[in-house]
Image (tube, rainbow, N blue to C red; front, side):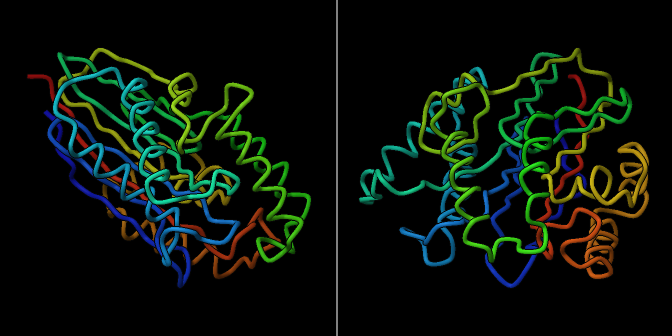
Length: 268
């Protein structure tokens, strides 16, 4: 019912890649770990890397069909339990991630989003995302583009916003150790076309369109990916970042982790 034809996940720098792409049976997903802005506690590579691996394993181990929002809430509860077992301090900022989860079932296509990941359905020309994250993060980053993550003030500002996304109050959530994330999952469902093409991506990959304007539209990006592949699209992304140092063209990082997968869903 679901076939992944192409995928990529690439670290933006020399550090750990905090993104994961995955698929199993009738589902596929992209997990985008939030760049750590406080010292790592449980994983020397990156606490965010630990989290995305935990979430990926949880998605692969699912046995029964469940509501995606409830499943994501249950994963957050399991994250909380495991962090407690590992002695993660309650006063520390826990690792967090975004998740795009696509499910094909009973001639229906379901897309569940939490955080700043995106799903594009080219035959419908429909882009699914939580636009609030992009707007809020761009506004905050524009305050100090030149300093980037090396600035203590910038890192503290990011940590404060992330704590709000994890704990609330409000209806904007990222996936971490708070089961209330289930309340913030955006779920969209569609009647499945005979062959439905799907592009799932992290915000780092989506910058080819919505930040750097390498492509004018997501339809143009998808057409390029379909013809040339995700690896060639990634090369364009890295070339743009190399030509435009941080502080120009909305570059906040020198380069961001970038992940994407292309899938085709078919009704039985």
